[in-house]
Length: 457
Image 1 (cartoon, rainbow, N blue to C red):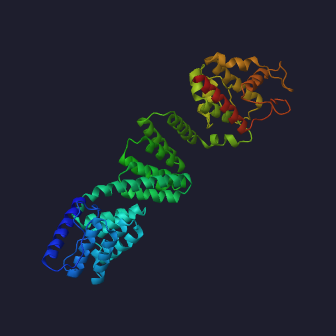
Image 2: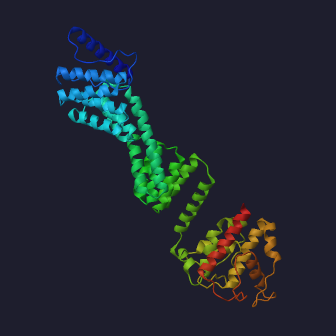
Image 3: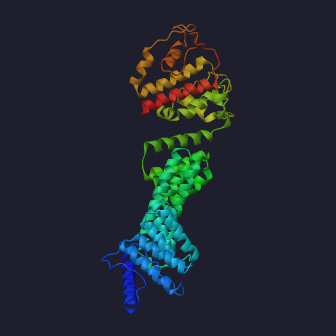
């Protein structure tokens, strides 16, 4: 554009000097200058058939004075051109450039707008308007004005580089705005900013991922899912996108697909957090697949023997497998029990006993003495793998108001309390014969599970 402006200015100077030499002097012109004052300004060329010769002369003189640095003289000549021809929009454009030179950017926009109304494809006015809008901080409208100028005049191709830079800056501004809005909980504002950035760069996986994250925070899980899927389509190796997809699936209560997404992320990039997420989901899915009777244990007023067997068999599955199996046991009354497989597992591991008459009595209510007995047997399995871990449990001797040390159940009660699996009642009693609630059974087995996992590590 610099060479374009300088060449036009030189041509105009020569023409005016020639006219001055041929006839009476009509215009006062600046002396020829070595360099134009505003070489980046685009000369407002006159369209054929527009205006009068006198208006043309005034317009050309105005441009020469502007490039010579005399803004007042330039303005007088452009205004004189408009008086001679009211619809002479090149002079209106010249006044817009005068406004730019004066740093009167709003005034410049007004003049450029008038020229564009007269000719929407007038490139010099579109370029000048873009410059003024940048100065006013309106980069988005400036970009549109520059783009329109390049479409209108292909010779302005060098402007394309500036357009690309402006697009990048606009995108950066939108991303910064979106992040700030998201942090402030202004999700709608953040969403709009990311959508503007995506319009400018529709193949950017990063932008889709950011937008999906905002939509998830907003609670718009269906839309978040669409954008997360788009990220992975654009970049299947984006581990963070797979994690985000998993989180969105979890929010939609779609655990199987959440698990698949986390596993895909783990295949790309190993992470302890991902391992924990995957283990937790697998456990949750396994528990969800268990019979309804199992799901009801936690809320049961009292726990049956088959419920306790299932609870121990599911939660302590790995410990029971490591313990090995005793000789086969004969049980005659569990054929119709939903907990049959787990009853077999806990009896073979010696955690729960079969009665001498070969019955298990699945529906019998579990008492605290029986829970303590089962807990002590599990603790023995844990201690067999790590004797040092059991020293603190076995060294302590609890005192109970209602269970003397000579009682057959004292050892199991004391051990379970010392290990933190069970607790005495507020009055210091243990109450061996009291029925165990579902919540108590779940808490006891959870503690046993934690102890078993600590030993396994």
